[in-house]
Length: 215
Image (cartoon, rainbow, N blue to C red; front, side, top):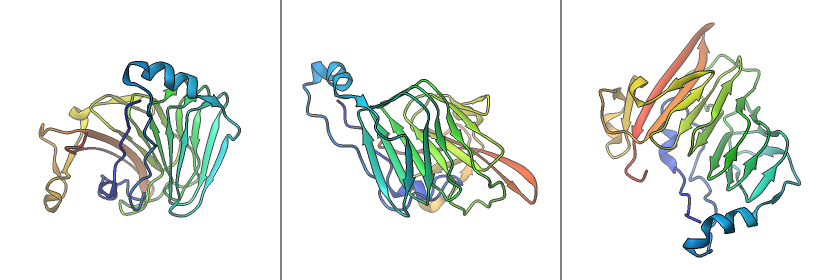
């Protein structure tokens, strides 16, 4: 199986979605022969024994090769959990209001990725709960703050709307961080992010993209 690398500390600068902290954990390498990759991945998957994950502050947790036959719930503090080579038959629900990050890599998602918490008011400096995805999925951010990041140049479905790089208003180049955020005017980009929150009762929606040479 191809090794899925993960974003590092640059996520702290990613639009208004800070809050991972430190270097994200990475799933282990798969040593199966290249020509048997698909079979090896499928055979390695086992039924889930746990469907609810509570994260501790700064925790980096990895869950691999697991089949979830019903909804999965993630809660807890400013931390992250990575699902690698998993199958989700139900929804994946991030209930954290403290910046928990849920990364899904090389997995099959048959439900929706749902952000569900009791917080709306926020500022850009706050750690946002979020999903990071390496393939298209349906993101539902209920009446709360939260966001999603597409780890690649593909459409991002967020609250029933489809967003692409062309919808971005801001751009960030990870190879030139001193430049900060600038207007997006068609620069080469490799990440797309969408987030919502409220300021003084007014709903905000931000669409931003970044360039990272590792993607």
